[in-house]
Each structure stands twice: as structure tokens, then as C-alpha cells.
Image 1 (cartoon, rainbow, N blue to C red):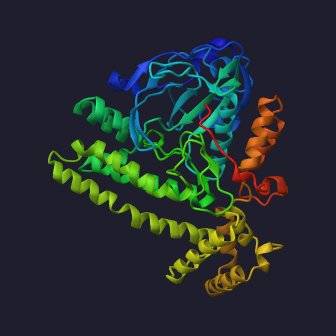
Image 2: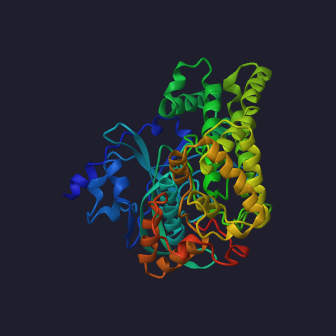
Length: 485
């Protein structure tokens, strides 16, 4: 394919730039010296009709920001956010949205370059990202996708050939991120705090038309949006908990209006069950620990509701009461979905109140015995063959009751299928993540690619070595993750 066709073949259909210019700043990526394509997601490229990029010598130039496609309209988005509870004016300081593409199915996606240089929102930052952190996001976002969890995705990672100065000198990288949009709770906070009411209403209408057109029939757009975003957030957190994922930095600017997992900075997976598990180096109080994620989601939603209050009703008290009625339903809805998710992991179908105590008791046992979260459920799905838990009296007493309920239901084949669909055989174990990233930045990308391939089929009964399946002894005791970009 010629360079001219490569420039023209992107099917851009940019709509965000039709919003008031207070919501973004037009700016181009800053060119890099020596781009090298490290990772490219072939299946994702095909799904969004960017497969013309596969194998082309100039692909690295486009995905590093050195070349800009025709009809792109590069922007840095403005937003604010509560970071660890403190309100801050933010914006894309190291990321630029090239534009929105439509695939043949008329699905719309943002194409964003992360680590592409300074923007008007960079503050004192250099706008760059480390190669290691961009590979990390590629790894985690694709692992989450294959775990069937709503997420932004990664099209590519390009090494820039330049150095990035953090606590130490590291290689630079640019990630191409694909998202339904990059609109966040923090976007609404920004407009609510720094723009006028007409701009807030314009943003509301845009989000509904782009993401939730079913709300166009509702009488109250703002209230309808709050309700549907709350549902999306509950569903997302439930999925995180299902596999033991810890986001690590659930600031309001990292919560997508589309209900996708966004920003894989100090994220990790919990190995041994403990609600207080937190690996983030900057979360010294454990605000975003594993067990706190549901309540933080509710806290973030209350901030979102506050931004929408002027649009819910002209009467402030009525507006607050209506928003509160939505937020008050969070806990009951979450609890119901959490128990349903746990029933799925255990392969149970019936609506039996005794199951609630069964689930609660299992969680208590996992906590007391410091059991591996994912492996415990996976072993149950495999009938506990050769499991050391078979020697534990407390667990065996629980298992007797569990098997009794399974016998009563008498749906063995369906139960096994349900468990296999909800309990992965492999997750990104912390020690493996760090190993493959370290080897990658030292020039050996094969372990990274092998791990990525294993993570692409987490619900298949593949033969997986102990290195990938089990946590490394004592590794988590001192393990820390960092923003690092």
C-alpha cells in the first residue's frame, strides 16, 4: 500500500471537536527520534478496520506521532478530578486523541497516543511515558479484555529511541489506546466547575447521543445518565472483583463514562485473599485497596451526581433528592450482583438464601487461611484434584455443604460450564508481570509475547506451568506498583 493511501485510509469522523473549545486544546504530538514498533495488536486492528497498518513500514511513524493521518484532528482533552479525595484541575498532559474512527459496523472509537509529548495541560511534566509503563498497559488491558471485562484496549507500543527521566533514566514509549471515548467523570467536574451551564448541558447531550441514545426517550436526561453510569460502574467493579483486580488509582478522572476500565498505572491482581490488599506506592492509606473499590465507586458517583445537579432540576432540593434516590440504591444493587457473581463462580443456579451464608463462609475461610483467591475458585471448578486444601478440616466442612447444594440442584454439566466461564486458569501474576517487563526493557521481548499469548485464553484448560499459575513466595510482601508513566 502506498504512503498516500496509508494516510487517507483512516475513517475519521470527529465529533468531540464540535463541542465548545473550552473542553479541549488542539495540539499535535511531538515527533520522536527513532520509533520502533514493539507490539501491534492485529486482531484489534482488524476489528476497527485499521488492518491496513499491518506490516507497513510507516506504521511506526503514525503510531509514534511522527506522521498525522489525513482528517485527524489531534486534541488534548480538558478535565478535572478528585485525586485521593482532593479536587484538581487536570487535562491530557501526556496524551493526544488523534480523532474518532468509525468501523464498518458504524462503531465509534477514540484513537489516542499516550506518551506523545507535552500539551497545554502538561503542567511541569515532559508529556512522555516510559516504555515499561506502556508495555504494562498493553499487557493489562489485553488481559482484561480476554477476561471479558470492559476495558480500553491497546493497539500498539512504539519505542521512541529517546530517554525519559524519572527516578532513573529509562527508555521512552508511546502507546496507542483505543476507547469508546475518553470522557470521564472528571470531564463533567471540569465543565461544572470552570464552564457555564450551557456548556454542561451541551456535554450531557453529547454523551447521551454518543453512548446512551436509549436515554433520548427519557424525561430527565441528567437523572437517566446518572442511573445508567451507576449501573455501568457497579457492573465493572463486580467484574474486577470476580478476578481479584485492583485498579490502584480510582480517582474520578480515571472513571470512564462508558464503563470501561481506563488507565493502568499502579494496578495489580490480588493473589492471597485480603480485602486490604494494596500495591500502589502512592496509596499510603489504602484508599483504593481491593475491598474499598465498591465504596470508592459510590463516592465517585456522588461527585458525578453533584456535577449534574443543575441539570436534574431547577429546584436544588428536588435535584438533590432525585440524585440521592439513585445513589441510595447503589449498595443493594451491588450486593445482589456480588452474590450473583459469586454464585456463578461456584456454579450455583438456584435462588436459595442459604447460598448467601455459604458464600460468606467461603470468603471468611479464604481470609483466615490466606488462600489464593483465583486458584481456590479454579480448583473448585476442577473438582479440587490434588489440592492441598483437601487436607484442611475447616475447608472440607465447607466443601461438604457446597457439594450437598450442588447435588440438590443436579445440574452438573451446566454447573461445570458456568464455573469454567467465570474462573480463569491464569491471571497476570505480579512476579511474572515484573519479570517480563524487566526483560523487555533489557531488549528481550519474547517472554512478554509468550505471557501475552497465555493470557489470551484464560478460560481454556491449557497446561500452564507453576511459574505462571502460582504466586512467588513472599513476593507480594514488598511488592509495589508505580504510576511510572
